[in-house]
Image 1 (spheres, rainbow, N blue to C red):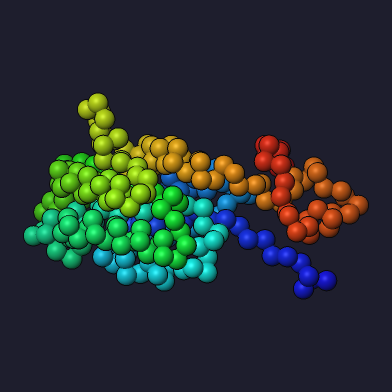
Image 2 (image 1 turned 45 degrees about the vertical axis):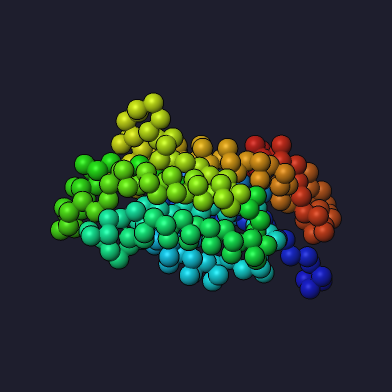
Amino acid sequence: MMSKIKHIVWPQVILFGDSITQFSFQTNGWGAEITDKLARKCDVVNRGLSGYNTRWAKIVLPRLITSAISSHIAAVTVFFGANDCALEDKNPQQHIPLKEYSENLMEIAQYLASVGVPKEKVIFITPPPLHEADWKKQCVLKGCSLNRTNAGAGQYAQACVKSAGQCGAEVLDLWTLMQKDGQDFSVYLSDGLHLSEKGNQFVAQHLWRHLESRVNHLPFILPYWGDLDPKSPESSLLSDCPQGDPSATGGQH
């Protein structure tokens, strides 16, 4: 009997990025919030790689996303730039020239398309603004001088927006949104570069607006417990279409 049971394939949203993505599953993180919103509908997969730039990301991507899984992918976020924009003279290991950064982003989108993830499923995210005074404190603690600037991050954010347009992908421009109307963007950052709790909430809120249209059609996987026949649960739980009523998610106890 067990050999005849049909495996359930869960759709996936893949978060591909640097440390801001890797840390997104921490308590109150933006990735954790997106995951909670998609419970029983979609797996959210964290492929954040702390310290990585687009050069390294481009190389490793074929090891993470292949044509074997592409048909199950609902969306992919591509969130790089905070390391690429490091100053060449202060942090040459992570720095990527602006032109190459743009090219790398487009190559990432082209690769995704080549394995079956179309541009409509790709969401670029720009680096957030950098609060130089706070980040300088972190640099001093590590024995180095300020190795990024907000103006530099802005150049890479603009390049990300432009690359998204050329690729036909959507883009979430955090650098611009977090500084809109001259607001104090430092509240969105924990150390001048990485996100604070408020910053995580900001990203989750704005990213959901881009994700929602890509996932709102996904069914609630496996029936609501109240719809099961206690005398014959197998009839629902082992059916070929193990879907439930999304409106029942509020009563899962």
